[in-house]
Image (cartoon, rainbow, N blue to C red; front, side, top):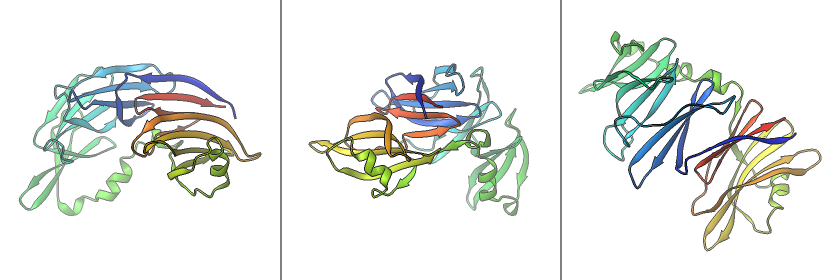
Length: 268
């Protein structure tokens, strides 16, 4: 396997979240001190921007629920610093024009050509189907018509997840971890995350650096023969363990470095 750098993305802001958008990804970046959030969309194949540094009218207390059929569905927060979502703001992925918004409903799932939403009443939740183009109510659902688990499964972005691989926990006693740990004379701290793919282990783990700080290292270990073919320091000095900072899609590796840079490599 040959690991070749393709492109990178960085605005020197913290990458808070990566949202799949068909053949694209949207990066959500947050600047906590200024209470600002920015969104940038990158085409996975080319690395070219669909848009960059987009900010909705609400500058911070906003996030993405889903991207479906070329539309981004944003939400606001019911209360600052609280997880509850409210409102739906539909924005065209390619023009960034607001198509419609609703302050009555909260987003549930996007499935096929329908938006499932709800609003809270004294008795609980009332569910509806909205027109994705206008936000108008198409149908009010009875309680027995809504299967939350089935909707969740159907709403997954299958185009993105079909050939994607994400890290799982790996035993620190695994031979591949032993090989990777040889890059330092210090003991691995905490958990090890890995993807086993095409005869290789892709590993992210932490060493104690100094004065309670940690160094986060990524390695690719060839299984036969056992050897390291690639390594990268993802976080030079961090106070906390950094989880889920890499994934594979197709023949490409995606790494998040220092919480603020997305680096993309070809695996050929």
